[in-house]
Image 1 (cartoon, chains in turn brown, green):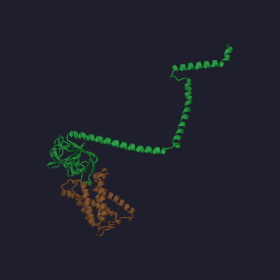
Image 2: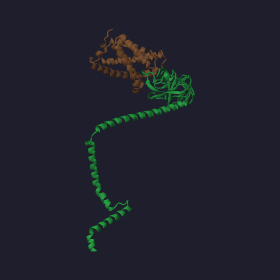
Image 3: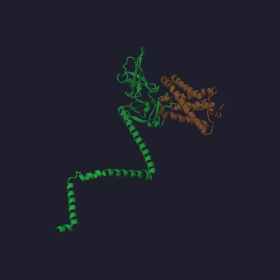
Length: 178
Length: 272
């Protein structure tokens, strides 16, 4: 329960940063999606049912801070959590470059799904004119911010006496293997 | 007589000298501005000495004041630094207030021209996604707002309220992909629908034969009942005509720089 609350709290902080602070520093195309990074980390570190619950809640939080109707990001993040779990069992996610590749993959999947939902379900076809040109910047900015957040996270982990390195990322979960 | 002169020699000398000085003084009083030879000589002779002495005295005073007599200097320095910071902060606040005042004045002038009741609001947030173009304002149901109300700035149309909370509202910007506003070219009255494309607007359904030029002003047509007629939307950026087709492809850049938007007006009523 404590872990879940921590994820939600981090999600709220991230979404507030995304809607209030980052717009002052970056144009929309260069604004990172911190929630996506959190969801990907969630998919790697928590057991499936917990990851899905938190993913749904994080999606709902992001939906309420966007113009989209409630459900868009809920659905997108559910798919991303499921895909992350599926991939994490096949790949060596302890490798930092691979983790960054996962962030890049997550960014692509998120853009694809948002575009698909908005085009097919919401008749928002012009959104593709906004989404598609922004993908390269999104990839770059998400990977840079993921690197910064990851190094910060590892530093904090070391500060609290956990073993350093990325090895702890997946295996630190008490519930891993369920 | 000679004996008398000799006896009172000193007395006579004193009287003569006194008279001479009085006469000299009296003479000089009449010619105040003229410098005598004596005065000039004294000034010339004394000047270098005075300069040197003054310089030395200044140096000594400086050394004493700057290096020796430093009681309370550090404390004074800290106080001055603190005062300097406070003054800088106050100056920044005054400049900020002055700029805000200027922006609000323009906004009020714009709303006065519009002749409709309007409520001022501050922009307090943006969209948490990179593809949607919305802002959050600090007024909501408690201030009498409701969904669908148009939002404007001094430069033109901002958008309309799409979600509303007790003390805040989300405004869909005209540049959002889901925004479509009935518009017309001010110069030729050519009609079209202004759709958001993220950074700019595309004007759909502008007939192929219609006269549309780069630089034309795009305004709201008033159709649809949300936005009053004649509000600036954008400036025509490009016009392209395909070989075939009923319509021409027109793009416009919004009149508002949304990244710099801080204050807006929500139009809350009908024409006065």
